[in-house]
Structure formats: structure tokens, C-alpha cells
Image 1 (cartoon, rainbow, N blue to C red):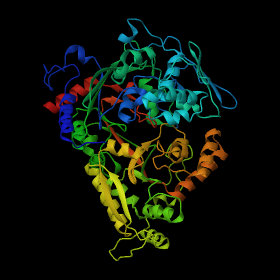
Image 2: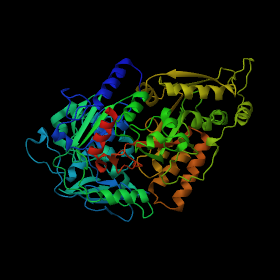
Image 3: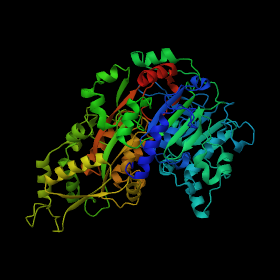
Image 4: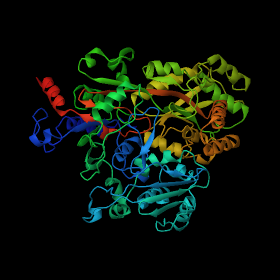
Length: 625
């Protein structure tokens, strides 16, 4: 995301100053070193940062991790992932129990706990509003309402809920979504019972029912009450509610005062010593354990790091605000916590993430796209020229492992022993491929031309931040070594995203994180019907589409695993994506934060950690003296 313009630099400075203030001193009456008021002393406040700005808190319209991290603590899905279990386990959240599922995985019935209430809001006109099954129906309807242009609309339609696509198409035709029209496969059978009927088997449909941030229960009257400003008024049944929001500067969540009685519990493995210790200390505590979450938006790496060192931020944790890679060696030389940080009681958590960093090739681009042997050879040569290990060593400071396929760690189909050409750095082979298919230097200027004699110029979209200059230099060095000319087109991240959606970029490097434990999601980046959506490469191959659709309906097992292996081979053979690496996240927390464990598939953890305010105050006093 963008970190460069002057306006945002001023916001960074303001956010840093704000983060240093006690939560109750927003009027400026107290200095940052003054003792907080007595009543505030008793409140537990978790101070975090985002390294990029949020956009909206309307679940149907969210496209960024930062906004999602907030909404998943405000809204609630039917199910969630256990806080400590590894591998992950799904458990009920607002549901009474696990769903009733038909033998063919087409009908899913869920009963919702009665007596769950939305946070108080003027939209309810002074009345308590109970969460009901229709609130989940409404959440799905809003996602497919064309007026909302939801980023997850294609994947939601791909669930094959009976009648959902027809409802969307009817709304497109009449320019209005009919929220009162029944949808065959999406019904509230009664006040607290929800039924999904699918056109095809979906053995892992329950994963979709864990999306608190996007498909959590939402009250229709709230949306209608706030209209176009609904993104500023998230009202859910979750542990927190929005208290203060200064766009691109500060977000404050406070305990939802009418949140139902939920007690901390989890299922760590018997041999998970850290997990067992967390459970022993926190089990039975009422959630949320803390009273407030105070988030500063700090978009420059240096202020991020300094805010943590100066104890203005309690943790650098999760993908919305983790340890900047530029300071990884300072914080953890050789992968071990620096002694000066260890002496302060700071804790370090390193985890292989369920994610990919990748560069996509636009398959419709006349230079790098296409399916002919020559075009495939060009993409494979570009991939072979690139030195992933140098990227990991020099740019990522060793905090990543080479990627071998689109499948991500911790997801089905991922095999840590699988090795492919995807991670190879072999300039000699790359040059041989180019020579074989007619990409040769005809005019003697040191750079190759295309087989028809026209110039061969690779254009890579990039961003203005300093770290991208390092990637650009590596790309230029690697492509230059095989005689390929490259040009970098610089734009802000939102501009590149808009161009990518429109199919106007030749190549662009970005990343993605898994939303759940099923590897099928990452294969969606190659699924033809998702071209122009999650399939940014616009890769379309009938054989792959059939394989993808077959894997979608099969339960996990040897037959599905074989399909995943074939999908990996296709990904390497056609190379629509160059998978660079799977990142190793390094999280840091001060000693007064207890209970943190990075979720594999979300950022939902703020309500399950404890903050020792007395210890924090003592350490701040030691610093001031």
C-alpha cells in the first residue's frame, strides 16, 4: 500500500503522537507521561498499529486486510477457528452446534443460539435487537447485490447456492436487488434455523461459514438507517464495537457492553507446551478479556519500529502491522531475539504463513501471454532467470521459504517435500529456452527480440516505496543476465490494483493469504470463470477448469490429492504465476501482553489476549526515569 505522499507523512506523525497518549487523554489535558486517571487505570487497553489505512467497515464492500481485521471483531460468523488448535479446528460461534449436513454435502442446516443481541445503536430505536437466521441470509444477499460491487461476489456465487446467481442476475436486469424475494437455497426456516441448499456437493462449505469479517450476521435496519454511510457504522454482535474513527489515522474499539457471556476455551494439542500454558492461564476468563483496542495508522517503516521500541505500541503482530522486514535482522539476528529485546521481556513468535508472494503474467498480453510453445517458453525462461533465494536472503532477510506451487502452507494439498521448477534459478537453461523458440538478439545490442523480429520489452508494474526498488533491481539484474530488456511502471497500489482488474498490466508482484484451510482457494487464481477477479492472470485452460470443478465437489482423500498434484504440474508447466515465496511472519509483543497466537487464516485475536496494565505502567515509568 502507499506510504509516500506528504499528507500521509503528517498522519504518521500524528498517529505516533496519539498512540503515546493514555486512552482517556484525548482532550490533551494530560501529558503522555502523566499518570492516567484512576478510572482509566482499571481499563485494559491493547495498543496496535496498522501499516496501511483502512477503507470501509461495510463487510459487503471490504477489499483490504486492515478493514477486515476490524470487522471480524465487530461481526460474528456462525463458526470460527479454535484459538490454539494446530492444525486448525472449526467450532461453533453463534451456532448451537456443528451443522447438520446431508450425505451428499448439498444441504447444510444450522441452528443459531437464541438470546444473542446486536450492540445498541440508534437504528434500533431504543429496542434490543436479537440476532436471527435472516441476518445471515441478508449478509449473503448484500454480497451478491450488484450495487455493492463486492470483491467476494464471484467466490460467493461459486458456492452454487440454489437461486443466488438468479437473484443477482435479476437485480442486474432491474437495477435493484429484491431483498424480500425468497431464494431457494438460502432460507431462514424459523427465527433461529438457517438452511443452505447447494446445486453441487460442497464438502468444505463450513469454511465459508467462518467469515465473520465478510459474512457475519448484519441487521437490515442498520444498513437502511445509515444508507451510503453504512461503512462508517459497523454494528454487530461481536465482542467489540466501534468507538472512535479518524480515517487513515486512528481506530478505537471498545468492549461491547451487551456482549453475551462467552468464556475463554481452546483445544491446543497435548504436546503444545505454549498453547497449554495459555489455556491454563486464560481458561474461563470472560471475553473480551480487554476493554479497548487502540489502533494507530503508521505507514512508514521507521516510525512503526520506533513506536514499538518506545512502548507506544504493545505488539507488532499479524499481517496488518507486524515487524517490518527492514528491521528483522536488528530484532532477531540469526533468527533469535536480540539480547537487548530479550532483557526487556519482549516475546518473539515466528510462523510460516499460509500465504504466497507471486508475480502474475497477464495471459491476454501480446508479449507475455498466450498458450503457444514459444509464449510458454518465454514465461518459463523469465521464471528461471529470477533468483528467489537472493530475494529471500537479501530483501526478505531470510524470513521466507521458496514457493513451489500456488498451494500454501497449512492448506490441503500443500506438501513441504514437493519440489518444482518454480523455485529454480537457472539462467543457462533460461537462455537455452529463449534461443530454442526464436527470442534472440538480431541487432547485436545485447537484448533479445521476439521471434517476429519486434522488440522484446518486459514491463513490470511496481510501487514507489523503497522496498520495491530492491525488487526492481533484482528483476533488472536477473532479466539482464538473459538478455531481456525490462521497464518498471510505477504507480500507487490502488492504481495498480485498478489496472490489474482491468487487465492492463503485463506483470505485477503482490501477495495473498489463505482465508481457510482448503487449498482449493489458491487454485482459484487459475480458474477460468474467475478471470478478471481473483484470477488476475486471466488464465483459461479447459483441462484445469475441469480438474478444479472436480476437486470442488470431492471430499478430502487420495482422489482429491491426486487432482491437486496435477494442478501443481499445470501451474508449473504454463507458468501464469511465478510463485516467489511463502513468508515467515515475525511477531513481537511486550511482556504485558499475554495469550497471543497468530491465527493462520484471520486476524481475529484481540478479544482473546490479556494486558497487564500495572506492568505496562511500571515499564513506562522506568523509561521516563
